[in-house]
Length: 78
Image (cartoon, rainbow, N blue to C red):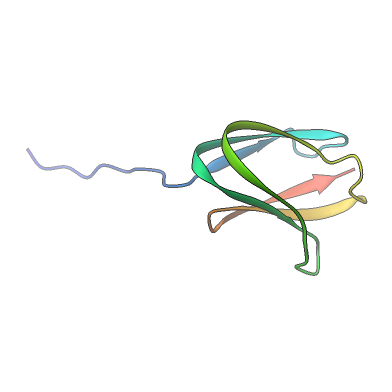
C-alpha cells in the first residue's frame, strides 16, 4: 500500500482573533515566537512550546503578524 502522509511542521494556532488583552498560542513544536507590527518591526519575542498565553494589552490597536519558526499568521488587536 502506498500513501502520502501530511504532517504539519511547526504549525501554530492563535485565539481569540480578534483579541484585546491576551491571546493563547498553541504550537506543535518548540521555537521562537515573534510579533511584528504593520511595518515589519519585531515588537515581541519569546521561546514557545505547547500552549503559551501572551499579554497583548500594551500593543496598540491594529493588525500584527505572529511568526513561529517561519510560519506566519495575522492577528487583529482591538
